[in-house]
Length: 149
Image (cartoon, rainbow, N blue to C red; front, side):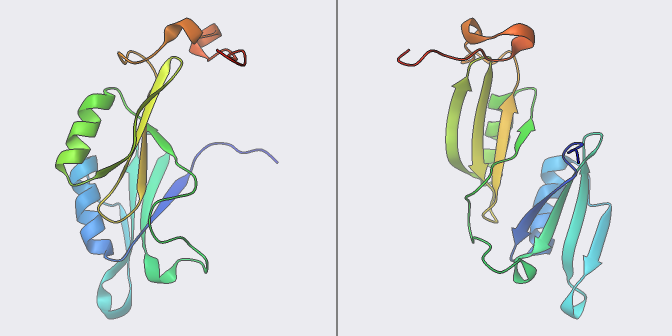
């Protein structure tokens, strides 16, 4: 068995058409696939992001039992070229801060909550002013930091 890479990230939404409109504005392109639900209203929408990744929006009513309502759990970080500009745009679109700008050696992350309660993680892999390249190892990978430093 081997994991070959990220395929599809599913975000749950109570109002999939509104979420699809919001993500269409954010991504600059509409979903390439939609599925109607009860009454013909869109209950699933899928977007292509980058070369291989997909983002799907699905009706929260069909989420597996025990699915948490609201942010929490794992955070998938989208790679961005300009973290500050991306955060400013997302804030102007109604997101709320979940994790502030946080340096991790040579990379900086942040995360926000979209208007539908999902986490959007962001990662700038290089060039952010808060990055600490003194802790960068080979090929920009962080080196272990000794305990107590």
